[in-house]
Structure formats: C-alpha cells, structure tokens
Length: 532
Image (cartoon, rainbow, N blue to C red; front, side):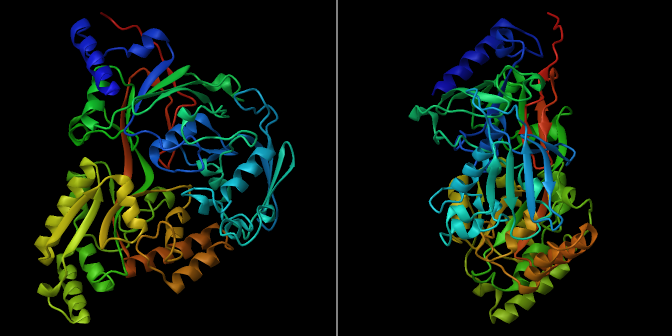
C-alpha cells in the first residue's frame, strides 16, 4: 500500500510539475550522486550465504565482498584478497588478505571471519540453498552431512591476513567460486539476521551499507565509509523500490524516478523489449530449459523426451518471444565455452514424429493412451508466453494435449525439488564462470538442481576425469559429457540468455558480470545540465 501511494505521488509530480521528456529523479535533487532502482520482489535475506536468487544476490553484491571479483569481461580480479598462492598439485590455496579491509563498524576484517563464515555455512543445521558450492573444499560435504566435525574442514586462518584452503581434488574453477556470494564473509562476532526488523546490529564489508528497509516498499543503501576502495565508489546512496508489476516499474522509469531497470531483478515488459531502440543487451551465462522428470511416465522413455525436444522451433522463440536471446542446443551457454556449436538439429518435425512413434511402441501404448500431461511454469509474462508457445507446438506436431499450470516462483521451485511434476520450465543462471556450473547439476540424480533425476555412469566418469586435465583436454571431455546429456535429453535446451536493460543516460559504469550479476560499486552519475 505504501508503494502504491508513493507511486501515485511521484506520477502526480511528474504529470503536473514538469513537461520534460527526460526528468531528473527526485533522489538526484536531494543528492547529486543518488540513484533509484527497482527490485521485483523483496530480498529473501541479508545473509549472502543463504539464497542465490537474482534479487538477493544483487543486494549481497552491494553489501558484501569476497576474496575475488568476476569482471564483466570474464576475468577475475582480487577483492578482499591481495594475492593467492596455489600449490603445484592445485589442491592447496593460500589467500593473502588486504590489511586495510574492515567491517563497516571500523573493526578489522580477518581470515578468521572467512573461516568462521564458511564453516558455519557447512554446519548441518545451517539453511543454505548453495552449500554444495563449497564441496570442493576437503571434508566440506562430509561435514554438511554430519559425517565429520567442522574442524576437519580444509579451511584454516593461519593468522589475521592468511587463509589456507585445502581441496579434495584439483578444481580448475575454485577461484571463480570464491567470487560468488556464497563465499562472502559475514561477521563471526555478531549474528547476521535474515531480516533487519529483528533489530540486531548489522555490519557489512562491501561498497555499501544498509541504511533502511521498509517491508515490501523500499530499501536504502549508502556508501560504506570503511570500504577498502571507497574512493572508487561514486554513488552516495541507492534507493531501491519494491514494485512487482513490470509495467508499473517501467512507467516509473519513464517518468524519471527509476534510473536502471532490467535483468532478472526488474524485468522489462515484453513490448518494451520489442519496440524500444534504447534497450541495451549483453550475453550472460543463462539457459532456459524444459526439464523432464525422468522418473515420471511417459518421460521415463528417452524417445518420448526427444520427440518433445525436436518439435520445438527455437528460431521462432528467439525471434518472437524471448528477443535478443540465442538458440540453445545444449545446457552450457555459449559465453562459457566460446563456441556456438550445434549439438542437435533445431526443429525437425520429421524426427520428432519418428521418435514419438518409437517411444509409443516401446511403451506399448498408442497416443490416446497417454496420461494427462501438465507443463509447469512460474509467474512471468515471458515465461507464460513461452509456455503457451510450447503447448501449441506439441499439439500441432505431436497431437498431444498439454495443460499448462502457473505457480509463484517459490512454489514452482518446491515442486521441482520435490520432483512433483512431469515436465516443467526453468531458467538457470551460472553460479561461477565455468561450464561446470551447468554440467555439475547432472552429476548425481539426487543433486539439488538436477530436477530431472537423470544420471549416467559414463557422463560421471568424464566429469571426474576433467578435474585432472589441462585446459584443452578438459574442454574436450566436457564437450563429450554435454553430448551425452543431449543424446539422452533429460532436459530440453531452449535458449541462452541476454540480459536486457534500460538506464538513465547520466548513469555510468554499472557493471554486469557474465553471470548476470548487476553491480554498482563503480557506478556514478555524470552530471549534465538539463534544459528547461
């Protein structure tokens, strides 16, 4: 309700007090380096280790910083770490921390904070959706499962500025992992709470600190005076509105009261993406898929799965629905492998029908014997349009009536993780800058994000071998592994993502990583005189 009245107030001002096409946001009149952005929903936590959804991540990157940082060009830079020493066997890392890093209350940030943060995350009772990202560390998985003590985990603060990490096996992408928010430190001497209304003291180590949070309405972050690189931070504060309607948020942008809108944190309406020349885009490591439950009849049959996959015309989808995206014929985005290799034929009605008839024959049924098939998707204009398209294609090509069912995202994810579905739509964004961020999801049928419950022994062998190979040979093994996925089709790759956005022309240096993380640590407003 507060958001609604604020919106009416701002629109009234814009309508009656000014007739300019480009309005300066109200925040700018208060402070020359203040901007306003939008989140489509309220962040789920202040603890960066608990949730990896786009909105919560965006806030985490404002408030916290890890050992390394992923740059827009895919390279890694040092963040809290000043340098890192890696052993010859690639199993031991010693991070040397910057001595001037502090928490926002002026106390020192030390290697002990990283040790405590990671070990607390790996406690069996700590609620985290991404704890598996730390399983590269020796005994991390065993500790999470309660099979060994936290002290046996291969993480140790040698002193205040040196952090020693021992891995189970060589992990070529371990440094990339340390750039992700699951690896961010939280204060070991104070409890970080899930919601600020509980009144606990909160301290942060990122470029910004939390100034205020009004439930389901607004957040405000301001520049952290104790950030180690505070001279680089151009913005004094960022106001974050919570508007869950895409059209309303865009109207606020048009009226000059929101400075940056787009990506997964505040999606643009589809008509804007289709019709606006000032929409900007960049490729990110994301893939939209349809995932089968391979334990659910009739999708326990590989040929039925292939029939559904070959029916789809991905060119139509990227030209008319998703716009700016790329055709996907495998789960791994092109940006992670520098290749646009086609792994199977896009849209072959002839092959689709052949696979369909073969699958029916193997199941010993006819088309009319198929059970009711329900296709699940989550709330979004784009997701709905895609689901409607797939429904029509499967009817046209295979003659199969598919019902579509929409859920709020949290409910949708619960159904996927409980394997309570036949076939469902999902978008995956990489957690780290390596193709294993997608391939590792299929390593075990019980994996947290392996909604298909598919597993393959040969695939697992290739994945295991890849950890011990040099770059070129490793890439060949992972390419073969991806082909096994396509040969058995536990998922249907649909498209690889581009992040699309619009921003105030005065706003500069908003950083977008190859994983789609939107970061404001270098952003600033270039002041220009606006004529009346």
